[in-house]
Length: 461
Ligand code: AMP
Image (cartoon, rainbow, N blue to C red; front, top):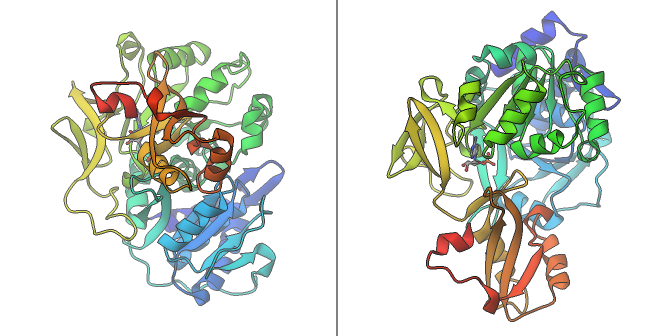
């Protein structure tokens, strides 16, 4: 369904822009042709996952489509990943090929992995369709894991198709998706699956925005205005940031019709402020982990929800998978759910999400985690992974990593308590070689200062 629908969109409107990033554009026809030619090359090269190290260049999307076409898993790695983590990812998924679709911020070579720039790829090959199954892995995304290593989550073509069908069954999202979908998340995060699925399956344009543009909101808004962004896919953290700027309103961005949010709690004040700034906009709050392909349920936030303490995260009568509660934990089962982590035994039975929740009037609500996983600035982090990496550094005997929250429960910073006491600046530099910068604690304190609590969860969450 994914490739067939993309192909149909391409046939109907070959000159329409499929992907836009700054001045770079790719029409549906160009995207299809370049993907077929890359797929032909990848098909001859082998079967292993293809690491793609880039940021928001449209070639990232060519490589995605090429991987889908030839049945090799796409492993997007954002430029923000340190080389140490790239090496771990390559080792864990046994990758043999690394593509560089755009200039890398740092020279990169990985052991036992062949590196190729775009110029190295022959472009005159013709692709022949391989045997293609729903169980073929479409992509592997890596998230923070409790084992001290990143965790690889393989998502099949069938998983993506089930998610996409659910997403586009919501008219309020499907209609603006036919115009321009504005991306925010890095392509190595599963929130971005919503933006490329929505745009490419609806025959719309995917507007990729870079981190630089997002840091200067004026530039970001200018992109949305200039290209008539109709559906924005972003984290609640990013939405809060946008709301800090008064020009984020319907008058200045009249093309914006819907926002799809997922990945973290959306607070009532943020939703209320959005309704005030964009009175007729559809605000869609969705919930789901990477393991179940971006989002498994969601709903349009209505005025009556704004008088509640907490917003619902999904309408269970219209979910992408079967959602049940066992001892207060949310379990997921169905066609969007993955089959097991890379290098680990397959999943048996429904997937335990680790999220605590409750159901009221057919709506799902999230009420926290049962483990040490947190969301910080929209990123999924397992505090246990940081602790384990810290304890492997020379000189460190013991470490505890905590998330410090504000009165609303939002994580404001990460603090590491260590023995013996060592220079924080040196530790920070060492950690940056292994962890993305958002996982590096901003505070290093001696263990004696660890706040005492009768409840360990209060310390680690
Ligand atoms: P990720 O795998 O990065 O998409 O993160 C998934 C986790 O984000 C979930 O297991 C939840 O803990 C959290 N999450 C996702 N959506 C929501 C939401 N709408 N409200 C609260 N937490 C959410």
